[in-house]
Image 1 (cartoon, rainbow, N blue to C red):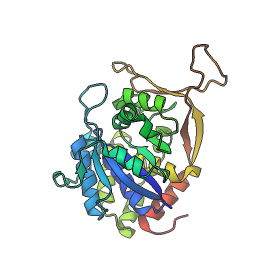
Image 2: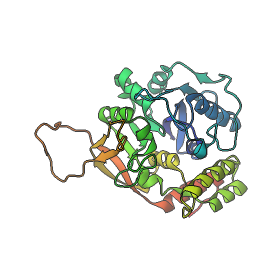
Image 3: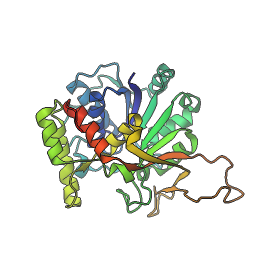
Length: 322
């Protein structure tokens, strides 16, 4: 049986590619999407999900729920059209959001979790963690029915992509990120350590365009690659951060993990805002006033690229790649 997945995301290019990938991977069954601000505004994120839903004739039973518009810091979010395009789909301008299939009642998230509570529902969060944190604030008892949470976020002992030390999702709302990690019991963090290695080259994209049916991928990933190539001329392709996080749900053998306590720097006015810090000290009870049962989270620190290549190319082309 396919793994039931509820997606929280700020639907830009790599989030969109992740959603499309999920359609072609029989091991994954997306049961709903919470659209948040981040790469683009919340309403544009919702419009993008709706566009993909209509493009691929996805069942209207898969709800699109409006999530957060601003972070818990109270700041107005800054968007990144140079990376994701004005609307979050690179050169593509989706139809205006007409409200069809869009749910404004955030309580619908509770309904989805309760509906699949006996089917090992997991959540994957590919954007800022504001909406997910809100669930822990409002409905902590409901979140007990979620089997596991996968988070694309963080950078451990590697450079960030929002600042020198911080990854964009944690940097965008460090308060929400810390709240989730301090309250969730079963979390896998998929950080830049591995997602930066989940590269799709232009040659891979061209072949998928010829052999596969998801023709939207090429304009999306060509746009995405132009940004990365301009920023780093030596890069060989586009990192699919959110696809890697989604794959971690069903292909755990692709990754090497460590269980560690994690904290997110909360100082919103500091250069280290949003930095993810894992405690790797090899001894216990470092300080007497530390919590007796500090939460440990599973962090993906290595990825087997050839497994990533195999699953991505096989599912996106319908051909078996070795």
